[in-house]
Length: 318
Image 1: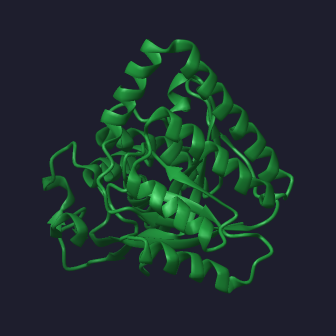
Image 2: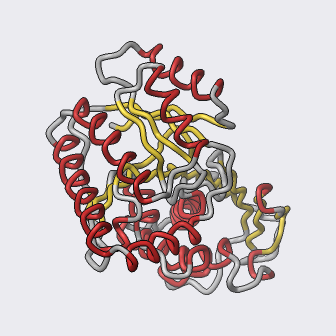
C-alpha cells in the first residue's frame, strides 16, 4: 500500500478583530505559504491495527496512538476519524506530522495539523472523508485548543477559502475574484488575547455608546472588504485595513511594536496595514499593491524585519 500525504494551510484574520465578539462580522483567509503535513505509510512489521505517530514539534517519536491521552489533539483526531469511518482501529502504519506554521501565533496551526491528519488517515484507509466531515472533526479537536472555538480556524483551513463569520451563525465561505498578496509579520511580542478581550469588554461596559460605534464601524469595513474581494477589487482593501487599524488603536489593543511595523510597511510601499488577531503583540498584516512588481513584497518584508519583526511570511490569496 503506497504512502498517503495530505497538507493544510494556515490562516490569518483579515478584518473584524474584537468587534466580532459583539455581533459584528469578521473575515479570515487561508495562508497557503505555510502548511501542516501528515504522511502515513504501511508498516507490515507492526502488530495489526497499530498506528505509530511521530510529531517532532510536540515531542512525539514513534508513539502508539492509543497510548496518548484521550484528550491529546492527535489522538482525538485519529479517534474521530476512525469513528467517522466506523472502524475500531487503523491498519498497521506509521504517520509523521510536520508543520511550517508557527505555533501559538494566531495562524491556525492546530486546525491545520488536524485537517492534514484526518485527510491523510482517511485517504490511506481508502475512504477519504468529505470536507464537511473533516471540518466537523477539526472543530471538535479545536475545543481542546480553545475551549469554545468560533469555527473560523477549522473552516478556513478545511476549505482553504476565505470565510465570513458572524457569531452564532453558520460560517460562510466565499471566493477570491482576483489574487492579492499579503505580508504577515510577527512582532515577537507574546499576544495576550484573553487580557486584550477582557480589557475591551471593561471599556465597552464603561463607555457603551463609544464602543458600540467603534464595533459598528469595524463591521461596516468588514462588509466593504468582502465586497471588494468578491468583486475582484483588492486595491480597495488597503484603505480599509488602515481604517480598521485606526479603530483598533482607539480601542487600545494595538501596541508600540505593532504600530511601528504598520508604519514601516506603509513607508515601504504597502497599500494598507493593520494588526491581526487579539493585538497587544502578535502579528500584523500588510497589503502589497495589486499592480506592484513581485519585488515589492520582498521589499516590504525586508522593511518589516529591519523594523523589528521576528518573522515574515509572504502569501498570495487566489
